[in-house]
Amino acid sequence: MIYPLYVERESILHSLDPRVKIIGTLAGIAAMMLYNDPAFLIPIFFIALISGRLLGKIEVSQQLRLLKPLTPIVVITLVIWPLIYEPRLKGLLFGISFSMRLLTFALLTFLLLMTTTQRDLILGFVKLGMPYEFGLTISIALRYIPTLYILTGNIMDAQKSRGWEVEKGNLFVRMKRMTAVLIPLLVASLKTAHELSIALESRAFGASKKRTFLHDIEMSGRDYAAILLVVLLFAAALYVRYGLGLGHVVIYG
Amino acid sequence: MIQVKNLWHVYENGKEALRGVDFEMGEEIVALVGQNGSGKTTLAKHLNGLLKPTEGRVIVDGMDTMEHTVAELSRIVGYVFQNPEHMFFEEDVFREVAFGPKNLGLSEEEVEERARWALRVVHLEGYEDRTPYSLSGGEKQRLAIACVLAMKPKYLILDEPTTGLDAKSSESVVGTIRELREAGHGILLITHDMELVLELAERVVLLHEGRKVFDGSVEDFFSLELHDYGLEVPEILRISERAGIGFVRNVNELIEAIVGGGR
Image (cartoon, rainbow over all chains, first blue to last red; front, side):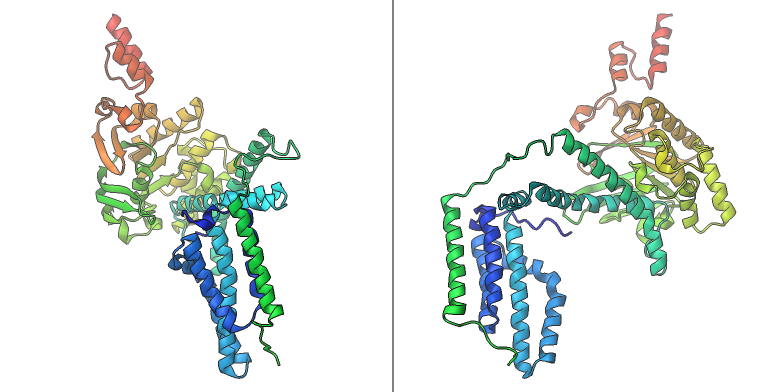
């Protein structure tokens, strides 16, 4: 299943304020885009992996497992670069480094999701200025993915008990056959959504303009230190790139 | 005859839902009871092949469920799920009931005959053109039974058939179950409703943490310390016990015992 990505650990990354982690992730992704030199991109990926292990206490194998679904894109990158670029060996090197860049983007995002509970993540985004209704919509949607997954399983079991078989026949027959699952699923989902909206309104959702939170988050000294570190690292990244002129190579000369 | 031999089931997440269950049933009404998470549904889903044993064997009228698909087994073991709405997708009641027999590849006349028969058994004649979702709770439950019944299975598994129904609807479902039993079906009743067990069951099987802890008569079952298994003795049995009458099945028996004793 897709969700949850969160991994329970006691680590520095887990204890940081979600806002710090969100800004850190965005800064990290932005910094990655400054560089295109393999000598930078390849090490940065491994640095990200190791910092996930050291700061987030998340095993390297677990981080790599999440990156697995990206394999097709990585393979395509690795194949296409040497094909379109001369000299081919250098093309391969670019292929490797650009897939590394892609994987680093994904890894930074996953590290955020692995070290932040869904509740804190939404709260972080809301505190950073996202409308609360939007945050609630996302969190409800995520909350219902496992529920719908279980519901689909139940419906399929019920239809199988009536001799329904999805595996038989060609694509069109199968698609037509899926209506036996899709219609009950749709009806059940609509009913759930309707009940949910009644439940929300009966608890005075939207009654006051400014909300308070039961589980509030607050920036501590450590969080300010961390955000300062993020800013400094980002400034350093800018300096290395534009001040020293390193990390960028001309690909299309 | 359904035979379950030393059945173990371990889910993908490592949870041991069943730990060595032996179970047999024939043409009788068996109540399968136990707390939430005791393994009732897991056991029941093995009987028509929705789940396959991790260890042990399930044999339904001589067919090993490991070697047959759910579609094949559905001719022998019918499973009526708890929420009837989870199976309704056709535009009218008749087509809904005909869906199962159609899947069996029967002739059109046979499908039609079975659908009419199944609707008659659950007393839903005249509802053929209604939309399944427009029926009342009890009618939906009976329609769900008809949908499975139209496959003409010898055994029927009913998961919480009376939960959430008012007294009248519940009665109509109980009546249908009785008639099915008389017509020679074996019925497995998964339920938390102890009054239903008292009224309807011929035998009770109690599961606790994936093991069978009791298998015997209804009277013996209600003499167990049910509290230890998170179950409650029905009020009527407490009354009859205090009145010194002992085991009764329903209000009529209690009244008869009292009136009879008073004479």
